[in-house]
Amino acid sequence: MADGAPEDRQPGEHVWFRGDFQSWAAARQASTGYDAPAIVEKVRAATLKVVSGEAACERDSIAFERIEYSLPLLVCLLYAASRSENQLNIIDFGGSLGSSYWQNRHFLAHLRHLRWSVVEQPHFVAVGQSEIANEALRFYPSIAASLAEGPANAILLSSVLQYLEEPFTVLASILAIGVQFVMLDRTSFFVDDLPDRITVEDVHPSVYEGSYPAWFFNLAKFRLFVQASGYRIVEEFDSWEDWTIDCHPAQNKCFLLEHAG
Image (cartoon, rainbow, N blue to C red):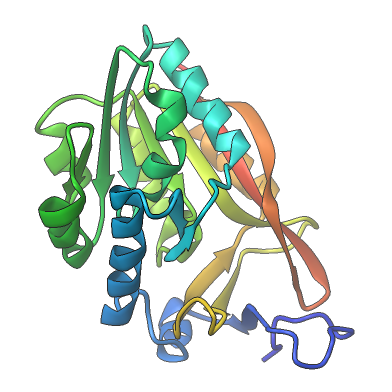
C-alpha cells in the first residue's frame, strides 16, 4: 500500500493520508476510529473555551483566538437565509459540538430566526445537551429527531461525507428529505479523474492521537449523483485545504445545492 504522501516530501513531514484500501473494514482495522473517548473530551474542552469567551472558535478540537472562517460556507449560509425570509433552520449533520455554529454566529445574529440543530454520535449529543446547547443551538441523535421538533430549510455536512462508510447512501437519504438547501463544506475530491479511494487519515499528534478511514471522491461522479437526485448545484467553491495522495493532487470543496422542485 502507498503511504499517501508525495515522493519528494521533506524528512519528518507529517503524512496525513495513507493507503489505497480495498474496503472500509480494512481501513477501519488499520485505524483507531473517530469514536475514541479522547476525541470528544478534547473537543469538549476547546468548545467550552468558546462558550466562556476564552477562545473565538473551535475547529477539529483546536481552540483559536481568532475566527478562521470558511468563507464559502458563510456565503452559502447567508444565501440560504436570504432566500428564506431571513430565516435559517439548519441541520448540521456530524457537526461535532457546534463548530460551524460558533464560527459563523456573529454573521447570523441579525436573522429573524436561527435554529442550529447538530446531529451527532450519542456521546457528542450527551455533552452538547448538558453543557453546550443554548437557545439557538440544539443537539440530536438523528435527523428524524431534529425534524420531529420542526422543519428545516437547510442541511449542512462539513468535513463529514468522506468519513462515512457508505457516503453516497447517506447523501441519497439526506437529499431524499427534500429540504431546499444542502451544503457540503470541506469535502475531499481528487483534482484528476481518478476513482473514489479509501485511505486512512492519521491526525497530526499536535491535534490528538487518532486515525480513521477517509474517502477521496471522483468529482465528475459526485456532480452527476447530485444532479440525478433532484438538486442543482448553485455554486462550487474550493476550500482552503488541499492534499497530495501518491503524487495525485486533491482539493477540499464546498458545494451549495438547491432542490430543483
